[in-house]
Image (cartoon, rainbow over all chains, first blue to last red; front, side, top):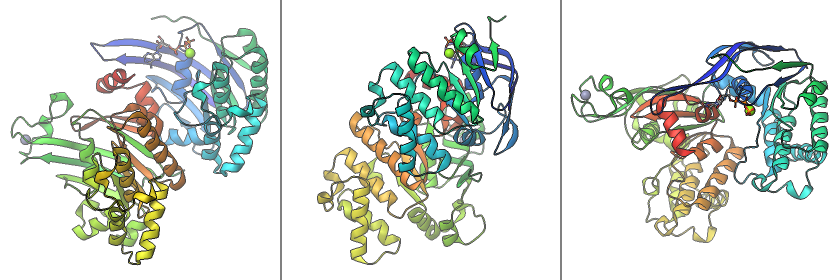
Length: 229
Length: 285
Ligand SMILES: Nc1ncnc2c1ncn2[C@@H]1O[C@H](COP(=O)(O)OP(=O)(O)OP(=O)(O)O)[C@@H](O)[C@H]1O
Ligand SMILES: [Mg+2]
Ligand SMILES: [Zn+2]
C-alpha cells in the first residue's frame, strides 16, 4: 500500500548565508493495506519529517514514496503534481499533526465536519450527526462542540484533531504522537478508535514516544536511531 | 476530482514603458531589479504561468511591487499584456464566445466587457478602483446587473437586496454612497458587486489590507462562507501569510515580477525552497 525507499530530507536554508539541516536520512519501510506501523526514536531524529514528506508538506530531497491509490493507481508521492496531492489529501490520505492548528473563528464541530464533507459531499446535518457522535465518544463535553478550540486544553485540542483525522475514514492515516497530551483513559479511547478504523481497512502510520503503547497496537515497528552525518 | 483547470495563464508579461526587446533577460530576482538597465522600462510581470482549478483557492504572495496586482489587473482586462495567453473553461464562456478555446487577450473590447461582467468578479485593493464612491451602494451593484441585461427594476431591487444580505451589509444604508462607509463596509460593497452575476471566478486583491483585526476576521469569514456556499474558484492576493494559510490550497510566490516558487500552501509555508520565500515566511512567524 505504502512503500518508502531511501527517503531523505535535507533543508537548505539560504537566509544569511547557507545552512543544511538533515530532517531524515535513508528511511525505508513498507506497510500493507490495513496494517499499523509505528515509528519510534529519540527526539529530533526526523520522525515528523517522514510523515510530512508522505503528506508532501515537505518536498523529499531524494528517495521514493510509492503509494497504491484508489483514484490514480500506483504513484510516487515524491513526484506527483500538487493537484494530485490535493486530491489524495481530500479523498485518501489523512494526517493528524502533533498539535491542532486552530483556524480563527471555526468551531470545534465545524473543524471536525470539514474533511468528511470534502470527501463525501454529504449534507451539513448528516456530517454534524456523525461528528457529534465521534466527539461524544471522545468524551468532549457537549458545550464545547460549538466553541472555538483556541480556548481548549491541550488534551481537548488533540481530541478534536484526532476526530478530524478519523471521521472521514481515510485509506491511509498518518498520526504524529496522537496520544502525547492525553491521559490514560483518553489514550485508551483513541486507541480503540484507531483499532476500529484499522479493522475497517485503514492503513496507519503513527509516531509514538511510548514504546509499550507502540508494541501493543502495531503490526510493525520502525526504529529510527541517531544518524551518521 | 476536477482534473481540468477552469483558468489557465501562459507566459503572461506586462512591461511599463517602451520595451527594448531585452528587458526580460535583464530583469528579475537574479538582477535584483525590475527595471531594464538598457531602456528603463519596468517589467511588472514576466513569464507568469499558472492554472486555477474548479473550487480551488489560489494565493499569490510577494512583497510590494512584485507584480501581484498587475497579474490581477491583466486578468480583469484593466490593462493589456505585452504577451500572454489566457483561457477560461466554463459554460458562461461558451455562451459568450461559442465553442472552441480562445485566448481571451485577443477578444474584442465588447467580448471582454461581457466576460468581465459575467464570468469574473473582482475586488480591488482600493475600493475607489472598484466602486463609484459618490453614487449609492445599491446603484453600484445595480449597474453590474444592468450591464448583464437585467431590465426589470423590481427584480434588480430584489437582487441588490439579496446581495446586501449575502454580504451582511445593513439594508437601511442601501441608498447611501460608499464614500460614507467604513473600509470594511466598502469592501463588502465591492464583494456584493463582484458576486452580482454569479461569476465562477473571483479575484480578490488584498481585500483585508488596512482593516483592523476584527473587521478583517469578519471579511475572511464572509469569504469562507461564500466559497463554501457557491464553490467558485478564487485567486487571492495578499502579503499577509495568515490569510493565505487559512484560505488557500496552493500558493504562488512572486518577486520582482517573476514567480519564484509555487506549491501546496502548507509546503510553501513549512518547507519554502527559494531564499526569498524563506525570508518572507521567517519574517512573518
Ligand atoms: N521545516 C523545517 N525546516 C528546517 N529544519 C527542520 C524543519 N523541520 C524539521 N527540521 C529539522 O529536522 C530535524 C528533524 O526534525 P523532526 O521534527 O522531524 O524531529 P522529530 O523526530 O519529530 O522530533 P520530536 O520527537 O522532538 O518531535 C531537526 O533537526 C529539525 O530541527
Ligand atoms: Mg516530532
Ligand atoms: Zn529594456
